[in-house]
Image 1 (cartoon, chains in turn brown, blue):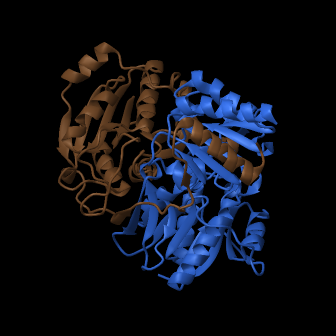
Image 2: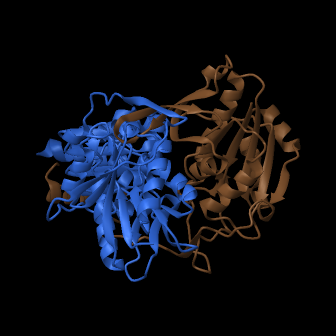
Image 3: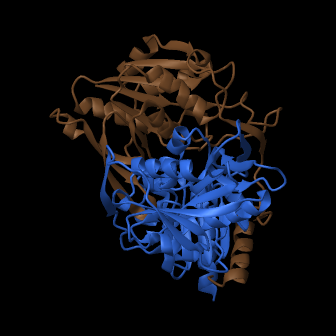
Length: 262
Length: 326
């Protein structure tokens, strides 16, 4: 069984984001990066599936510039067998269609049975790449998966996987997916392991292929960014300044004046 | 291609999702700005009530795609039915809520119908032809996006992006039968995860913990503060529930509960839009966070930029002092 995991490197969420010089994205040069949280869950889910079933090979892929190789290795170190970086440094892939097209181009003909993706990236927050990839490959798809039951595959019955999708309002949707399938995972599906030292060392030595996105997908972006901006604040937030005691007293007074709950 | 904007309504086990009416309001305002017409779209089994309900509450002319196979939501059948409708009616835009219903099929619909796809949109560009705004980086920045090519656009709209308006008159339903086959993958049913005993909607004061409280060991401080108020409850942001510091029943936000208490205290919560949707209508929102750029301050009325562990105990003790002095 072959599993593909899509991984993205994103800036730390607590970063101080500034708009770049061209005014169309966040300034990237001074940022620190980490593996997209949702993709860690995706890789963890793939590794758990591998532990449950026999004869499973996990391939991790990332679209990004070569410096992000570090984050790809971090994700692979959870237990993947091979990795590939699709280098987009010539023209950064900021739209999901380009990313999905690149991954689809790689995946076609390689007979993956399952694809795990994070449900969205922490920076662009679009939640498009996974489902687009499914459509491009002609795979089944379930998004915001919070539980994935592959036990049916142990008996080699028909290739069916049972997923639970998280909907709003505490409702969960149960789906039966026919393989091959793409599953995008939501937080809460699992708690990723700490990579074992042996895996970290193995991945450190691993030859990770590098391929240019241009060799996989030569169409342009499907969506263009016109400009980046700071969201309008309502301007309504009044900041209370001073030492803790003074601020606490002032806060209590304002709460009392406006709501009478204290 | 015509100039019609289609609003695809979604439904849960309790019927029409109210967010469909927000999307309707968004579409109507956008349609006015670009000189287009809005039509509703519902998918249901023949004889279902959803389409009539949507037509009444939205005032739209609703295309009711009816087929036995459509009785339960399924991404594949929805894709087939909507692609069929797109071929028949050639809309310029097709819009749905950015919820687990909408984002499940919107990107796939875009690929299949060779359309562009913009998701989690919060506003259209009022002074320009076709741009859409969307938030990134946890809400700290926003981008204005446009499709790279002409053609159909598939769009999902963030809940809370527009306020639903009662229609001037009821719409009407036009039943259509799309071509739909049995899907390969099946929807088996729905389960409601127990909401537990906690109904946050009854609380007058909600003290909500975010990742910034630092760990489950610090929940005691949060609970102590909550206990200073009558009719209070402890809330939580999603990361706190995912990390299992608090159970699901405390979660406030898009996938948790929506609340509007008299006082909402957001402690160590960054304020991503998925959370603020669930509490932005609270009478008074107070945010405490050591990051002055946390997006929560765009929603809060009062802001305190301090370390929670220094500030909370002081706040709690001052409230208690005040109570004992009364």
